[in-house]
Length: 109
Length: 112
Image (tube, rainbow over all chains, first blue to last red):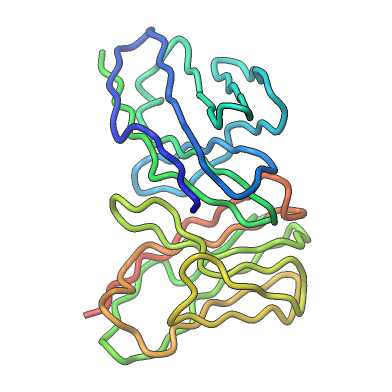
């Protein structure tokens, strides 16, 4: 079956680094997406990995290992505005996305 | 560009009523999709479309119908609303199915 696992909640302090893990078991793999969703708002796209390795975008980086069915999102220099849910999503064999349940990150001062 | 526009933003229905949630995009995207988001469940795909005249079922299609007569519009119809359909509904689009999706602001639907 299709399964995507993420931790439910994480906490961190301003200025710190946090890593949000995502493991997946899907029938196929055509890419992994990370989205950010603030409470009461729509998800917004953060990053995309289709090949193994690290993709860096400013304070955010995402890593993929297809052989391990594993990805992580790394957030550096945390700010209060980074408090949000982070959604991992996998495109399996077609165009449909399968989302994990999301990780709620709380950043405190 | 307005992006992805969903209407209404909020709606309360009674059990058994029917309703259409509207979704429109002005980016000429071929791919459009509908998700529902429930607490503790994440986003689940209801239906999607890879172009005008083409639709397909997602993970949770029961109780919902869609059509795609134009590139711009992708309405979601609830045929006979049930309390289990109380949720936040998001519409999303992308140039093709393989690119990141742009989400609308959502419709918060309560069924009594």
